[in-house]
Image 1: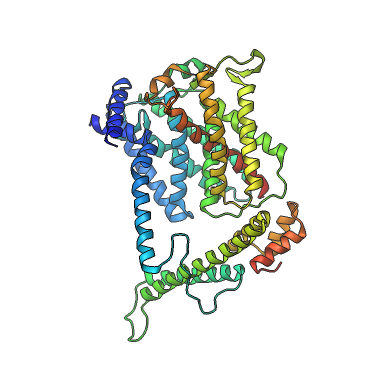
Image 2: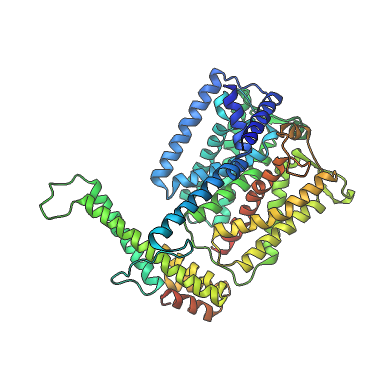
Length: 346
Length: 179
């Protein structure tokens, strides 16, 4: 056990030295952090007072956001926030709180302003409201020198900006917020104990189409981080997103959800979710190990540089892959199930 | 400062391994100790549950347990609100507002325990019969009634989704509710 801790310490020291970046705060960044913390405190306090299980739902939104920040961490830079602001490499908990506050206010205000609208329509309103807010926030961070992008992300940008932020924000924010908002809303059903109607027959085609959307959204959010290499030329549909691999993930997620919903129909939302994740993880981990070993999956230089150097036992596959799989599939699965629930429970 | 940042990196990335190598052994030892102590006191093995003492007027059906849980929850809320107000001097022999609130909370806990027991009994019976889909219906009916939905509306929603009439009726009967 002591050896284990020593290895952690040594790995951390080596990683810290290898991934050093400028944490030195400026007066402006300190002021920004103070504003964010005050806003997050106000958000949490208000939701705890005025919304059912407001505190728990805030934590869920922050958790979903953190999942996304964690596995896309190598794509972004977060500088000058001070040593206290970072949880892991350049992932900042202060940034998590800022985004979570934005999400919670958006969900609450839209739900209160449009209570008669069906959930599926309100979902798009959430995204429409979050996008300009995110653009302003990102523009502020870029102006203060806090935010930055990896070389792989820079290579995918057009160079056009609005208020100093890349115009691609208008595409990227709705895409990743779709996953995070769906995660927050799915788990709010569980926390609020909303009745979710069981189905006597699975809607296979609808389920497939929703899964297709979820996996494609995810692939777009992580596209700069990893290259899919060696697949047939005809299979590449957008940059290096290939129908062969993406199609395999779609079929796997679709199968996991439908099998669990059919044979474990009596499970709670939480029980089913863990079952989906278990089925997916059991299939995806060996697949990822093979893809990396065979050279079909090549992580970008910035992503590789961010790895700790620890590997899955008996393989040469980075430990981050094993952690990443349940994290990003948690977002994909919650998106699919959220949409199925709101379409079935109108 | 640097060492704290390093520790932050490590703890997050390897939290699962720490849980497995540290927390899990401690948890297992704790559970074993708790099981040994319980066995020495009650003679019960870990999988043998404690029986709730028989309650006067114990609800016979899931619906009755649910109604009782909701009534006690409403009473507890009222008692809690009264306890928060400034209280006049308590007359000798009368219960204070705080004591009433505490008693109401205790009744809520008891009602929730009874509801959970009824639900578990129903679930065990249906699992033994292999009627998992009917169990899912029972859970949905119970959750909907708990939200305050009308029984007719719940039955209508299930019918609209294609559930057979017989299954819907059986689910309501299992709950002790009427459509």
